[in-house]
Image (cartoon, rainbow, N blue to C red; front, side, top):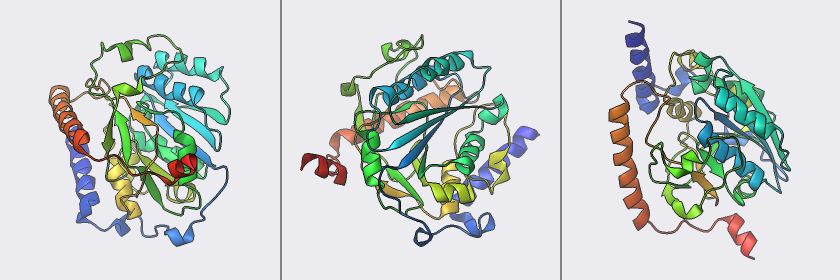
Length: 311
């Protein structure tokens, strides 16, 4: 019965966020761009990830911050994890000893059932952030050469509630025995071959591409006004909260183009208990379609950051 009630509530909020209900039911007062301050200079950006049995991906994300630290902005890398995941805990201990310039580590523990609902950790980070902008991402995404400084440039003076990178370069769907994933069996700095990735475009602030204005985060949190998305769960959940967040903020996000953003795609979603076989088939089909689409699309437009760099 509890599973049935959970599924009914989940479907209710997915429908509500599709436009069936007004967001004013759950967030009557939403900040507007005119109320926000556009900050300039060396911005403070917080990057928030969750990790449960995904240390082989997190190693690439944290390595990218060590190998390609920002020069023109300050980054706080926040990782939510559970000490029961000893492999992730060991990886964080390894990176704790490294001190890349302009990067601060921020490891935050959560009980397993709270970690499994990413909306909980994201809300905790949103309410506590001291950053100018907070990026809710996933641990299979990494920030290569020039990426973070490009973000700093693109966010200068902006007063958007929510922005998102249009283009992310992705691998094909990798199996668990792929050499890229086996390279992280022990804590170490790891690097990618950028030739293994293909650009993919997005039309809204989904999943790992949600960059929220810091004042908005501190004001309304991350789906804090929807109690369902703040309840602990027994298994790792898909992040339907991103749709609810866009609904609450009354925006799909403002698109920006930045270079150097990469994501490792993988077929085995071991964190999720249900419907593994069906989900794996759907992911492979979607990735195949996206790959064909990416091959025919035009090159992304030149960004203001790239124009300045080439001048």
